[in-house]
Length: 115
Length: 114
Image (tube, rainbow over all chains, first blue to last red; front, side):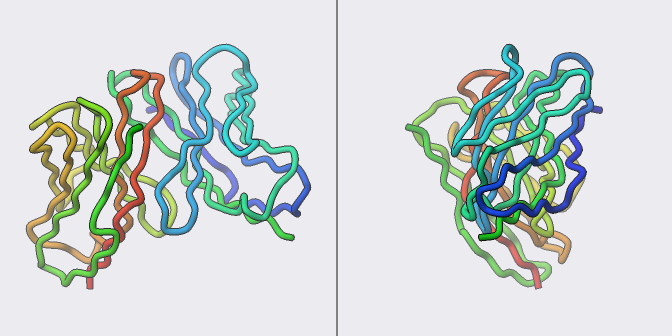
């Protein structure tokens, strides 16, 4: 089965410092990988995706993610964290064997940026 | 541009009562539609998806059902709610971009079963 794992329940970082939210995947074949952010009591907002090509993907709000095939990882990064980045972050993978667009999500990582 | 609407935003229902959550997409045609449930504020579980009117696929057996009476309408229902049905229900649509496209989520419906 195709899945993603987010090993950290919570990541704490000070404002202005770089942040990394980790994601590893388990898929057969080439993965389609996604990052979403969720603010309290809101729906999920799309940040970025990796389909093919350049391993460094840039997305919304200054976020980027690096696809690493040898380590089967797709970590989310930002050079300088903002307090407003505090939210729940989800990594997701699209299974390629269904023909549909459904996504399988990780368990989420709560990011807390302190002033 | 495309938008997705969910209602009601919040719902408190007694055990054994019926449920109807609605999701409507605007600005696109023939979208793939999805219902996810988020329990305890964390992981998302895919409940149902639909690729067209009247076409529903269920991912997990449960007390819920889904219907798609119109191209851009997706309804989540239950005849008798259980305590375990409490959660945050998210509707999503996809279609643009085919298999490489992202899903777009509504603002969610929070259901509390007492």
